Figure 1 (cartoon, helix red, strand yellow):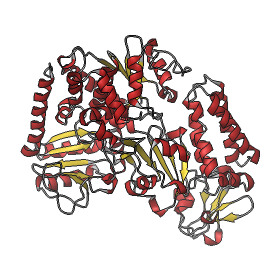
Figure 2 (figure 1 turned 30 degrees about the vertical axis):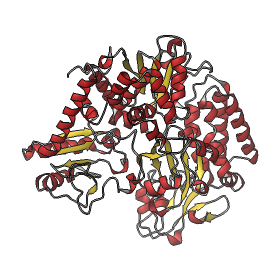
Figure 3 (figure 1 turned 90 degrees about the vertical axis):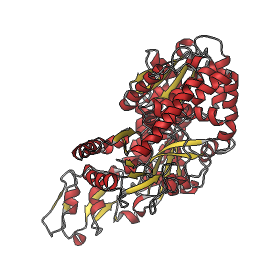
Figure 4 (figure 1 turned 90 degrees about the horizontal axis):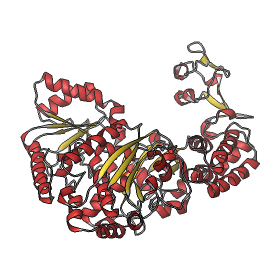
Length: 637
């Protein structure tokens, strides 16, 4: 690899890298395979092996490129075929058995298999194919604006040349040659970028505090300790575009005067760590990290610190303690890390998404970024869209888009024509919003006003079959277990809240418990040391606020209308309605259902685990839910 000694060297390399990419699309075919964690989990490794085997059998010299997640996780594994002068076509839910047909029809015969095609990307490589949806037109992508995710799924994350070909490190070259540190900070302040880690503090102001703080050396830290259930935004960016994060951190380091930085990433993300380390090594070899970057006076070293997976280490002071080799516990603030952080020196901590966006702000300008989104929440928001939603995956949408647009336009609505019930934003410490809040704009202030939070980007959609009491209990179980135990309000309050919620879901609650929830929550929010304890009651308070009738039904009627809380009901088979088809027997995982073929079946209550599988498969309504005093079908409960 050549060492880039100045801005001109980088420009020459960019020209060369772009030419190589263009030559690829002209001279030969390329197969792109989504090899992010979501793709691998869906079977992409087997698909990749099938592709290699088929190419070898046909003696085809076709390049295979592993890319990160493009966002549509529900359609993994994804395989793209790029023919010379033709659009790049994506095939979804590819299995090894489909590979020979795709290779034969598309790669050899140049005939697109339209029934398997998901979308096409022209990107200047050829005219659109008739009858195929382009990515820009696809419902999942139509309302998205990809800035942090701009390269994910598009380029080889393990190739620094491909990153440079798409203007990578151009922003870094610009600032070290044209701007001083205050110019960079002013640009960030003018952009209005608020930290994407959850707190939403203005990034430029945060950098300014650290730049003006006394003490040396200073440190730049990336918080990649993503531990929310159902969240995978940071992981996907690190896996799909690690150089964007490295470049963003280098820009931040230049702005605050830091010679060293750390990426704190949990060890449970082995692929992200592997690609990060490769990217850092490549940047070093090109002279984009290390001493006198691009011939300037700016020097910057970057290391990866693997975390052990404690959720509390997502809090910046606990994260800093962990880097120092101490127990991951938060400490009182002030002083804030910008004044006294890593080893007592001024330190700047930002999220993966904040750093990934930074190079684009420096390259395209603050006015460009601030023109997207709303005046107080500029730019885009990245969400992991999960739960009872058709199009689960990773999305990046402009701030100000409504929850309704995300759920129904981007997400495709609720599966099986079921009714939307609530959406949880902000992860396990966030809040759930009901159907009445669907037209709430998605930005920091609007979500807070509505009773939820932006958080770091988790968004979980639930349907009519979800019990909101159990839903809150689930998140509370996670949050209380992840308490570091340092402060009493969090350590004890979380456990007491969980005990109350457990009583209610077991049918042993009282109306006084609802007052107890509010009492404990208030003191946890006011007295806890860090955001983990302060926000742990969030899901409980939000669900109690918007779904109080469900709590009261659990207490007064001893019944869970969703059929989820096992302590309140039993499943029973109505003999007159049961034809003895055996579907429920096959669905039962605990062997609790017995009966002869074509004869009414019976559920052994001592063996039933109340999972509801039998109810879901019974098409004749023969399986009923028994309340405390009566038996009713679930729909009418």
